[in-house]
Image (tube, rainbow over all chains, first blue to last red; front, side, top):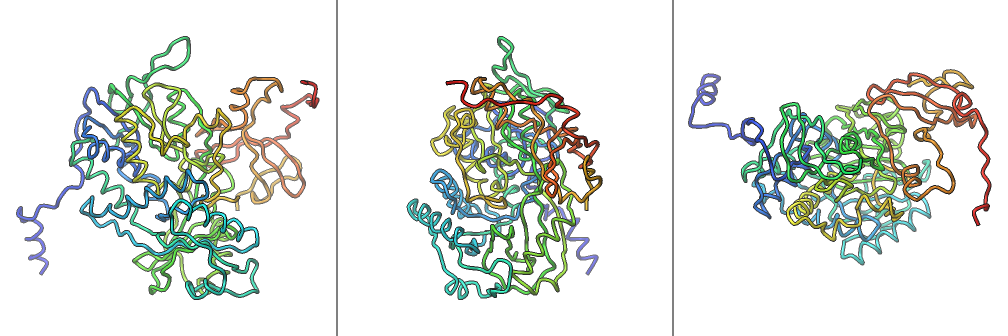
Length: 418
Length: 96
């Protein structure tokens, strides 16, 4: 048998398909340079090629594809946000996600579970009702369920009154789903590469070439990398976690604080939890992966660092709350822990579109809501880069809103205290 | 747990403290909007050594800490009075 396997492995008749082409030299110039080879950057390259036929595109990734924060989230997809702008935007993302596996011809393990945001106080119930009404108005399946109904829908939770935050009800969002985050990045990367975009891994941006007039930055013309300088027509940064540092190279500041968000998974358990359960008051969200692991996350760290370290404090805090919801979890062991760096904005909404530098675009401020937006971000970034016009759907997320004092207040965001 | 040294209370668990933002120069009250935008919203958000306001919650004490955000190490903490020597008095309503 081992010989049979060896023979099979060495047989040229069964080549292992390569998702991404082998590394190539940098060209002298590209029409569009995308900084960051995570989900957002790769999706932008993918839709540029697929929707607009633009393939003289380079994606520059300092590490490896999907090795940053794309693979560090808890993979939840939903559109039941609070502001009409947010709801419309994330709904397009959910629609795109549903067809993504077909689009890629690759299983992204998209699994619709139903998403429950628990309410533990009267004021939370009021907010849920508000969110449900905004959602329904925008055509999203979303409703408030009170405790008795909830208990029938998600019987696994602890409905005891003898806890710090008894469950009073939940906002139920039937299309809430999870997907395999790595597969989303790989699918977009492979699809973009097949259509002619170039993906350069191990290529770090060291600086930007920007023309100046009267001392202020004017227009981007090129990108300096650790592998040489390239000319660029248009440049977009999609570098969640490092947005502030890259924007600094372009000469402007962002209203972003980089804060780690930690998560962990338990040992695999028998499938018992179909729903995705979230609680803002308890700072907990949990879903069971198809491997049986409970994927758990909490709130962002109390202060900012540029690190992906894990802390015991975080897990103590998270588990204290998890044991209120699922008391048996005290018997389970943790299997893995990790952290991602999130771009937190003051209004919990992203920053997309034009910047003070001509032909330089930003895709940042993705805090704890970046993964679920990957398809819509790619599609609309591509439209923006191809047409030179900012699509209506992403106009509300302009950096300019901070300069006009027009913040969004997206209180439907996850992992943040409101 | 990570330990932070409070200039008033000595070494304490970091959970007793709250982060209070970057140390920035307060703009003049009659400055233009862009200066306010910069002060209120825009962040240096540096990957490196930063100077920040921190607050010891149980004793309501504000002070300044210098940290390296790449390594999560606290380099120095000191009372705000070491930087801000003069009292700032705000006069409300004198712009009318």
